[in-house]
Amino acid sequence: MSLRKKKGSKWLVTGTSAIMAAMLIVVGCSSKEEGGSSPSGSPAPTEPATQAASPSASPEGEAGKGTEEFVKLSWYMPKPIDNMKDQEAVETEANKIIKEQLNASLHLNLIDNAGWEDKMKLISAAGEPYDLVFTTFASNRINDNVQKGAFMPLDDLLQKYGQNILAKVDPRAWKAVTYKGKIMAIPAQTPYSPAGAHVFKKDIVEKYGFDYKSVKSIQDLEPFLAEIKKNEPDMIPLLATANGTASGITLYDYTTITPGISYSELDGSIVKILDVPQNKENYRTINDFYKKGYIAKDAAIKTDYLAEAKSGKYAVMRDSGGYTEDGSKSTATYGFPTVETMSGYPTISTNSMTSAASAISATSKNPERAMMLLNLIWGDKYLLNTLAYGVEGKNYTVKTGNVKEDNPTIEATSGSEQTWAIWHNWLGPLWDQWDSNWNSTAALEAMKANNDNGKPSGILGFIFNSEPVKNEIAQVSALQKESTPILTTGSMPDFEKYYTELQQRMNAAGMDKILAEAQKQFDAWKAENS
Image 1 (tube, rainbow, N blue to C red):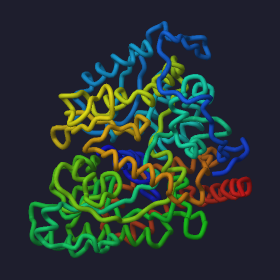
Image 2: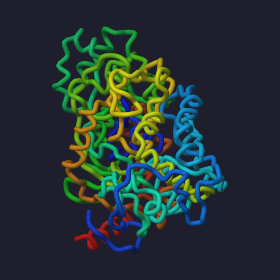
Image 3: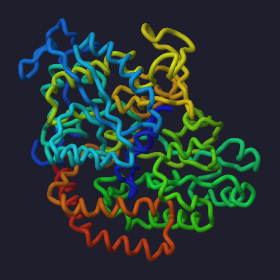
Image 4: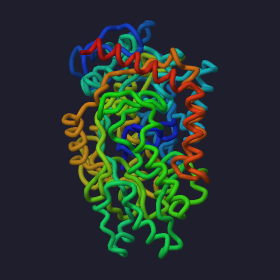
């Protein structure tokens, strides 16, 4: 399966949870250029294109650089899976194309998820030169990087070297990455409103005759979890980790604006998400499950949700990239037969449009070539799918067609045999993915149709400028990082005491000031876009 999870439209929006979300998914109006929350309109390609410029074209960059000089490009992203031992082989194959087309090479700097956020902050603070980086609304945050000048504006580079990108990016998504009239990242093709789901091990469901389709809320899981706890001593009823919890926790009617602050799609209000009664009730349920032994006692120190899910020792998990009626996506990713039932369906938001994006570092010594590389990936299906799936015969086998000439069907390795993976929307053009056990062509077409027809959030296009409250957000984010593993696993001895004290600590850290600033910016944006 290739993608990552839905937008984190609630309290659970830490960096690592956003990475998991991006992994598991797959995956407006015009305004003025004043203020960080006022995005511009969409850029338009000067003409359609299907390939990046080749060295023979000798394109000229802003510094007058063509492709005559060989350059080495670096790209930072979190590790999609733990075992990426085939990186050298994949880069060797990819660099054959990159060298021929751009007279350049690519090296991927893959950072363990646990250290991803801190590593990128250190790199940025040190002014370390690099070229490309993975960024989202909540992981290595676009907003934070823009405010501190870590990303390069891309408008001119896109117009000169980004024709494939401009031709394929959903025009609506540009407003989600535009700050003060400048495009600061390239939004990926990705599911904007993928339905979430509860996932069950098929053999266990059949063994106990559980009507999994009757589950409408997290509370509805109780009878099944209790039966597993009683009769399956070697199985853990529910998977929860420090950065991921049951699918039914997500509040689909609330869209995150900034950590701790959300927009209610129900009544148009701006709220502190911890104050929403249903949010508290959902976490109370998780705590109840933990106390009853439905969740692993050491869940709060587990940080790799995907690895835990693949272990096969859990009866109930969350979806692996959006709901599929036949359970095929989770089955392919987790490596054993599953069934699933929908838990909810979010709106299209600025956040969901930026659940995966690529940026060029302000410290890049070769921004022109970096943009050419992105454009090549958006135009060359073989290069894209090589970077994603790996090397033929090593990481995937061809079932039909030819990988160099048409749209083949392949079978990618999975489970313990998988030694390479980059989710396509981390690279950019998801719809150019080959038909596979990650996503079938039919599934991709359904995702795209869902994007085209999805319901937009009431704040689609609104970008919160965190600069006026950056100190408060830093304090809130620190508290969130500390409390998320406890909330997601329910591993607090006294829920009411913990939750109440957390609300008090968040307020002391500046939540009311952040809320007031968010309301002020939202009111201004709403007036501009009425």
